[in-house]
Length: 66
Image (tube, rainbow, N blue to C red; front, side, top):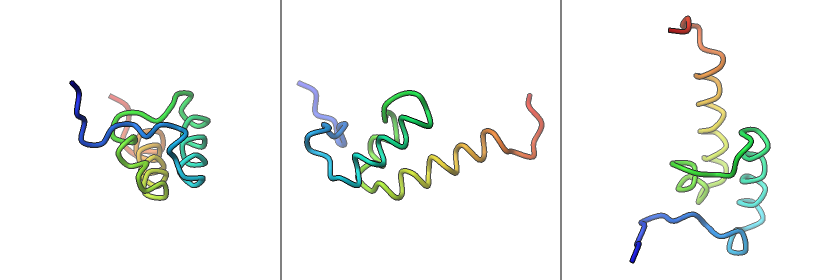
């Protein structure tokens, strides 16, 4: 029996705000919400801000690639 602390929220249980955030995430990433973003989806605004920060650090960093 799996008892995750913060399981992925089923689409039929999401609020409208969560659905919109999940769709925005999927459109930007090409895959559904997963990993730490699944837990952050409980606060859609925080999840999208965390995604934006990660994208900024990953793709717009002033540090050269390895």
